[in-house]
Image 1: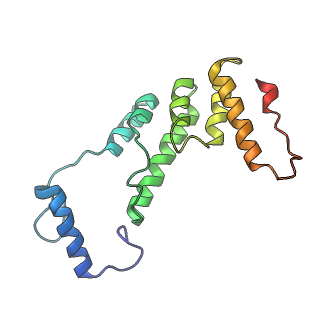
Image 2: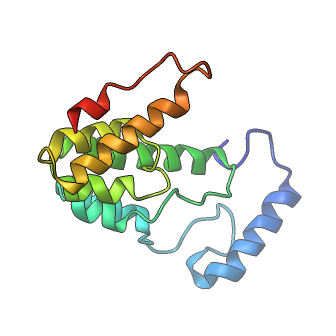
Length: 159
């Protein structure tokens, strides 16, 4: 159930294994059960290793975006979600504005309200990163506000 939500036919599995073998060559065993013949390091390993060492800056630097973004495989979705959540949690826990800014500059961080709040809290008041974060939070709030405009942000008073 890691490859597909539904049962896959033997023909489908063999076709995918053949396709994979063309890509990875001798890394894939020749017969069932299909296994990798030696360990493979991926960018996910680099991100998780950095997180395990508490090096959030390196983890964010190694994180190039969602894992296999075009895949709908349940196993890939699980890893994709977990890695993103792990990086985000580490970013939100850090007090380093440089790290938070790097996350906020990513596609996933651009609209991450919690990250922008963390940047407001971690940046010196009046600094460029603080002012940018306050403005971004106000924009995010405005985007979520009802169309009648009754909701006004209090964030600008924090600038």
